[in-house]
Length: 478
Image 1 (tube, rainbow, N blue to C red):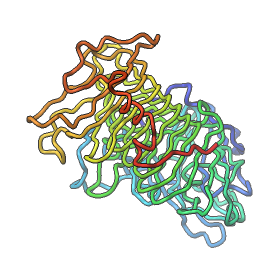
Image 2: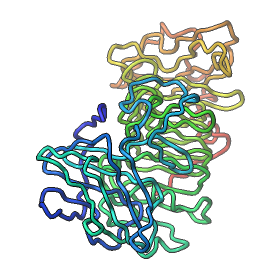
Image 3: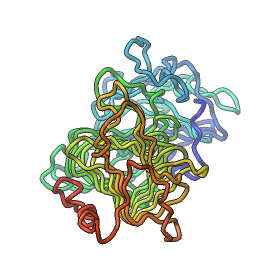
Image 4: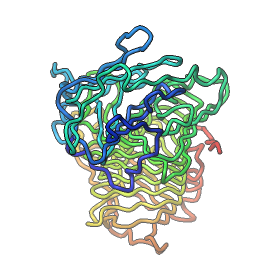
């Protein structure tokens, strides 16, 4: 489990109903004998001091009614080709090794069956294995976890850890549910609530997520008309250690490297919480693929390609932090009063397709690397790629405050010769953080500096979200 280091500010553990084992050393949740447990619960064990995860043994869950095995986690199975996230990022097409795999939102991901944070070990059962109205028995072999105070005896009897789930889930037609890590809501996990949400509800469905640390991979597809809203932007934290080494690409299907992602969706809104990818490398906090999606008062923390966009999206009053190519932009995105911090390298690699708009940044802030070498967007040599150099790339800045941006502002633009006349690397009234105009005398010749009154019409057009987003006028739901 090396490499799973999270800043202490993000490690607050939400209190849960717990039960002490007979030796008074290990507390468990759900408590032994607990009733009305949500089926998406994790199994949580709290030790007097930090335990370690073993390399053998199994965790088994049985249905108490017929002793049928419902789920099993075998700790002898490796977690991933690169469990610490530092190995090869190449596709694993020829790798025949069996790894720990969970089906999340209909797609397979490598995952950690047990994660230890400080004194707490969280067991992640495979998704959607438990059901409503059932009683379950948990067995854990002694080798699964090792306690600093001595051997952990595990749970080997059919009565040492037993709990019952709620009789039923939310009623049909419900339009608002609550996620709470302590089990007090309708769901324990964000993914559990999203899995429940109807694909195309006639009325918007809202998932309210209470404050807490939700360490889970989140992925969904083919959903619409859904809002996920945190209780507090800085205290509601969803995150996971993932990247292109931990989850290399499959031969087919969407990227598996983000902490939070959705595919082929429409009219999704994320509001007022934080998403973090705890690994470095190609490691999105969020990947969005769909149309008419909204980010509202969000905080996103990733690494390379910290946010990847496809389709159309409206971002307001949000902050994104990454490590270079912080926005990998295939989509049309209108940013309003938002901030991007790129701790190294270019802020974006904008890959706008012909006939669409790209990243338009209005009344926001962009901060580059402290070394001062960052640029707003680059077009590196993409020879042999789908579209060499992305000749219709667009990033437009209007009234943007900036810091740590190289004097040339844009680039590098590399590769075989191409007609750059269609590249829209444009800016109007770019300022420093104090609001003073910046020196644009060394700007890359591919870029353009808009001025008044000559470019008034262009500036007005790009201030209009519907112009940028193909006729869609965004509506942010409160």
